[in-house]
Length: 335
Image (tube, rainbow, N blue to C red; front, side, top):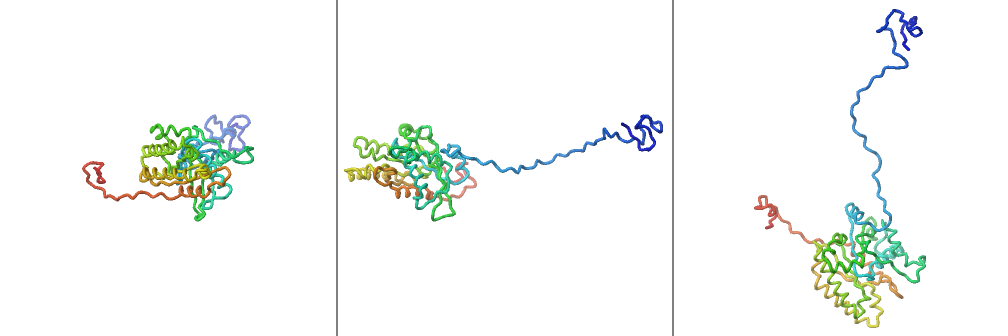
């Protein structure tokens, strides 16, 4: 309804202007029901940055996939360890014992500082607990589908309370071991081997005390290291540990001295053949879960400590760049 600023104008009631204007009355006020609006000119503004925190990636507690392990390696310094050997050589039992030792606090030089794979460690040790109802301690074996998966441990050296160290440990399934021996291509496809800082090869003492199996077990160890030497583009960056696993089969044998001498022969042969091939070659004699005797915890701790040692990088000779090389690839004196 139209209204007028003159007090006696009847336009609000009759619609007739006091001064007879039909349009364009200078005293007319805007309609109350339809106020005029002005559209403000808008100017583009910069988007306000989101204050929401970055998403945090949670893990299931199971073994890490190669992609999850790769993300961790890209984010923080990590030592990568690959355990390999034939079926029933004791690889999984050895890893289960490491988890159990951190759980009961028997590690002397290191303290547990975290893990993204606690469920996997717990499942690996379940059959060795009274709660499982098993008649005797046991460890479930690894299967082919678990290839290139990783356990994770974060530890704190007792001597350096402010320091933390992360380790990724992969267990090459025993059923894949013959394929690695037979095929260089299959060996090259193992992602954990390509990235490993430490390789732990398990030589089964249960086979070494058997005259029908001992020589094939020795030959397989040499053949496996030969395949690794061919597949790794940088074997000098790889620390190799040969573990005579299930050592209780030797230590409690009636002919212990004979079998220990055979192990010494294997050590000498592998040292002669591969001593200068890899960045380091060490030997250990370990019984992770022996029958009727305590495990070799001191040897296990010593081996674990080697994994966290700083690698001895090869000396690099400094070379001056040639500013005017004859060819592009000769800039550093190469021909």
